[in-house]
Picture 1: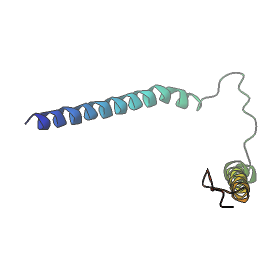
Picture 2: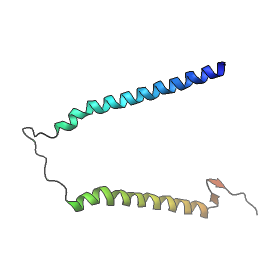
Picture 3: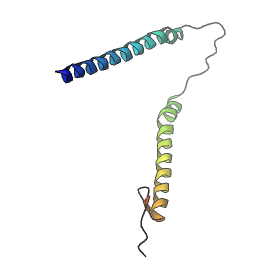
Picture 4: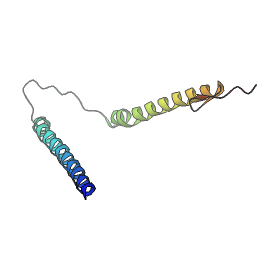
Length: 98
């Protein structure tokens, strides 16, 4: 009987924690909402500049992340290949069998 009560108390604690995280997230989003909507209206002295073209947008948000991913993947593969050449496999050294 005591284990059932303990399990219920644990699950209630988890529910309270999940509710607190949800409430905090909602409050944070509501606090940020006026700031986001403030950008709809121009103030004196605003000089936003020109927007990005389609090519610039694709380059910034598609090509650049893919290129960065490929560079990091290539560096990892080069490091893995050099460790295999030195006798290490998966981070450990092979025993000397000579």
